[in-house]
Amino acid sequence: MPELIPVIKKDEIDSKVAEVARRISNDYKDSELILVGILKGAFVFMSDLMRLLTIQVQTDFICASSYGSETSTAGNIKLTKELGIDIQNKDVLIVEDIIDTGLTLAYIIEYLKSFGPKSISVCALLDKREQRRVDIKIDYSCHVVEDGFLVGYGLDYAENYRNLPEIYHLKL
Image (cartoon, rainbow, N blue to C red; front, side, top):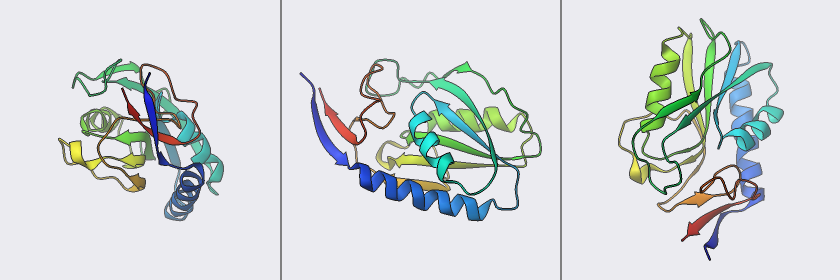
């Protein structure tokens, strides 16, 4: 039976999401901001984040996969849902659950650049720097986390554990 070790409590998550929402609202108060959530993991974070923004935003989702049912990335990135909104000459904020190696995010940034946005920024719930393989700028980060496979608050292992309200280290 897998063991769940608490890493980040709900009140810590809520506090950081609110703080980041205030920063984003201030930074983009005069912009046409589009949030692009990366499915499936970012949907819980993005939902909470966008409800705390004090600015008007549009939203869309893309789905990229690189893990499958493994606990480390295979490095093979697949887009399984493409962008469905016009982002040309607009400010885009990618909303991601966790940035680990950075390979998936680098792929997504290049994909979004092909649509001619005014700018692309990145907002991540979790920044896991130890495994980083590419240089990625994270403009808004809620938590820097250590090594380990994390689940909860949208993060999964083989499609399980997304519903947990806090973040846990999964020990298999």
